[in-house]
Image 1: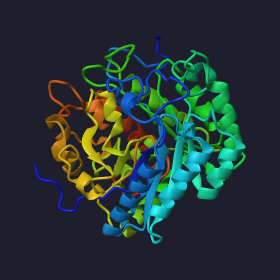
Image 2: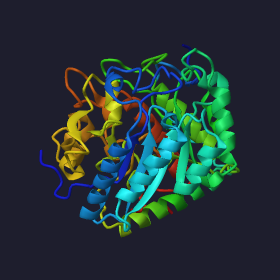
Image 3: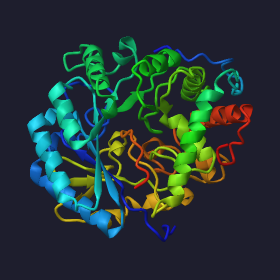
Image 4: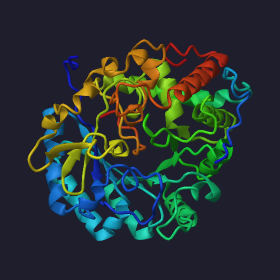
Length: 383
Length: 64
């Protein structure tokens, strides 16, 4: 296999500004998965690491002629960094990137620690904020409990309500699918916060440790998401997008996807840990100990060196990196073989279809059938 | 855990059912407009070989 001639530069830089969390979601790939790297990492990113990361981001953007860079403040729970320290981190990243490169900040939080002073800081640095919430309290409480096993729902909702007072800072809501929740109820509840975007993530699983299913012969996750799709189409008064579903529409129409979990184009995000080490796909921690480890860091290596790391070159191979049955599948341009961690087995590495293959097939066909029903040829650009 | 996802007939081939077309085209019209914007951004971007961002990030990275 040879990579594409033009290796796609990184555009999104995920900074793990805090490596602890004030809640204890049982599905969390950082704290409750196979890899326990968080235990040896600093609780928060230092200003020195943020400065080195900012310089590397600037260097990379200039080298590739990128007019901007997308910096995502992530964790753990990033607000555990504290507002004063976060201001220092934001300031040093912005100062370290050359003036001609626009930095767009985003932060992903559980929402429970949001306050007015936080929002004031986000105004100052134009940080948009996404909140993780799985649905109404009964749904959210299945997994997103505090360390004392109490509900985090009320605090998260209070945070979202505060955020809604400054809607220009509200990036949207991220939810993880649980089959035990009613998809329409979850959709309608999340939509009631009027987010610009909702996205749904499938719970992490591998062929060694497959996701929970009530009936393995039924594509339950695909059915669940197709019911979300139907609910979304049935609510024209709501104006939010649903990223996974819009990506299926875009990819079906020959337009590039917007997230690493669908489509065949190379992902362009990279993760900088709180100690400055660099990871390609941090969610690989759900796969096995050390799966995300590259042995690189922002003090010693440029992001160009990271692009050429053997563990990341598969990103450039496109369809050729996939399992044989995926390469000949008519839907491969849309699903892209599924999200990388979901393809893993100890026996064959990532050379497998996704553990969600049947679900993705069901959902993609459901969306494409719906497009045809509405007079839209899914194989052509949008009407 | 019980699944709340109702499926037509377990153990039988699952056939997707298209939703009723009433009003729902309003949502798809908006989606079509956004996808057209993405296509336009993709065509004008200096480097068109990459794609989107991290799964835990919500904003669209294009055009950059």
